[in-house]
Each structure stands twice: as structure tokens, then as C-alpha cells.
Length: 363
Image (cartoon, rainbow, N blue to C red; front, top):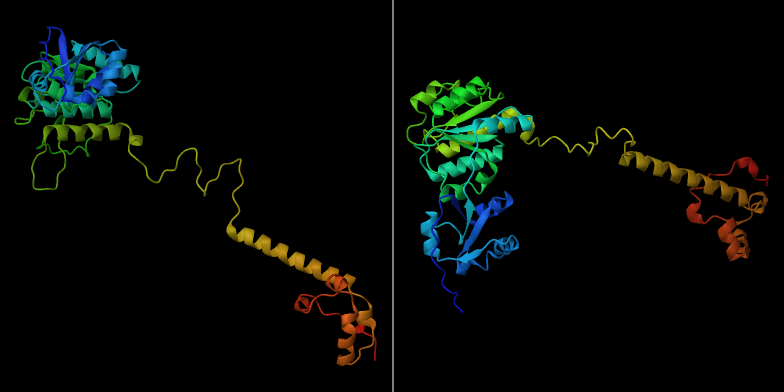
């Protein structure tokens, strides 16, 4: 049975935002943003069952819409058949970004965007910023890629967990950050100093310029430091989102050396063999166990030989030696049960020490 056709997407209100794509919708729910309605295409509703059930639990109206209409409303076709209409986003200020750093008891860590043009680059940088743990993102209100559904989709929902601060005057905002002891670090492919050579351990604001022009003149003048990313290939530049992401994680690595993996470092709860826990004695080595076992075997052999010597009938040592034929004839006279207990088998003769010569009677 073919799914029933959906309806056109209703127009958005003045204070409404459309977030499209499975992951961004899930992150919007996780961030507890007020949702007005969930939009799904009939063809994808079964695959989106968990999201639909979650929306129904929250009593969010579910509307089946046409796929083409959803593409037109979102502005791109990678919406995966689902979107959510939210209350308008609340943006932050510089003061709130710095307050978050104080709340976390960390030096400020800020990303500044200077007139990015591509929504995909914008979303990718926001995703990297959230992963690197920045306290907020500052960007201009004009001449900047909008925070569109495509940019939110590219961020994988990171926009729901970031403090985003649009400003009317970006150079003035950088001056404000500088006055607050935040070091302004700009990305410039022609800078003499590489990011690895620069000291990024202090409270930095990483500034990434536009894809075509880079940093604007007014922004460049307000940078305390310009750094480049060392490259060894034939390509002379990197994508703005890639370059910005590299600088963010270079700064993170210098701020928090422990964030970099240490393959040779053992887990804190598991002491290494060379340094065992103080309360537990070091384990015995295989050689020690082998020596102990050998000593035990030797003692058992000597004890067995002593017992055999003590229980051996005196007649066997004091009787006058006879010919071999007579000795063989007399040997079977002993009871079978006593032979095992009192007379050692011939195979054990080598284990028993020889008796002293003076124990025998003279012929």
C-alpha cells in the first residue's frame, strides 16, 4: 500500500525556526528547546519511529508533509524526511560567553568568524568549536552566512549546545575581548609564525576569515598574533572550516596537554608490573615457582628413600650372601603385599643411597 501524500509545509511565523535533519532534530529535543510541531514525510515515517514516538510523548503535534515542500522550506534536500519547528533561537552576548568560562573555572576560549560565506563551512566550524569545548562563538550580523537549516544540519546539532553571539561591530567586539585579557589570534596563510610555534595556552580568541578574502583589514589590525598552519604539499591553502578546526584543536592541545592521548601511560587503577600496588606483594616469577617445585620434589624423594631404608628387613642386609641361584629362589617367598611396602622395586634402586659396606657380615 502506497503511503498517503503529505501536505505542504505551513509557512513559518516571525518567531519560529525550522531545524531539519535527523541529528539536529534529536539535539534540539536533547537541549529542551520549545518545539511547536514535528514535520515528517510519509515515506520516512517508519524509519523515524523513535523521533515520532518521542514527539508524541512530549505532546508535540506531528504533521506529515510533502518531501518537495520540506526541501523548499529547509533550503536543501538533505533533510532526511524530518524537521522540527522551534521557538526562535535566543542568542547570547560577550558577557554570557565570558561568564560560562568563569562558571567552568577555565580561561576563556572563543571562536570568532569574520564574514564566512558558505553555510557548510559555518556549520562545520560550529561543530568543531563545540567539540573543542569553546565557550562561545562571535560573528557579525551582516556579510555573514546565515544560520540557516543547512548550516545547522552541517553542525550536526552543535548549535543547540553553543553560545552564539552575533554582533553589529566585529572590530569593536575584538577590542572588548582584548581589554578583558583575551588574546586575539588570527589565521593567516602568510604569517611568519606557525600555530605550533605560537603560545596558545592563554585565553585565546581564534579568528577565522572568509573563504576568499581571509581576514579583513580592520580585523587584522586588532589581532595580537597571526599564525599559519604548516603545510608540505603543493596546495597553498586550506578550506576555511578545515583551517579553523585545526587551530581550535591546536589551542586545545596546548591548553590541556592531557587531552592528547598517551599510549604509553597505563590506566590509573591498574599498576604496572614494574611498580605494583604497595599493599600487594609482587607476583612470583615462573623461575621462582619452578625452583620451589624442584626443592619440594627433592625433599620428597629423600624422605621416601629414608622410609624405605628404615622399613627394609634386617635379614636382607645381615644374611650371609648366597649364590645368585639361591637368592633368586628365596626372593619370591615374601608376600606380594609386603613387597610393595618393605622392599623397593628395582627401578627405585637408583634413588636409594647404597648401604655402607660395614653393614654386611663377613663371609
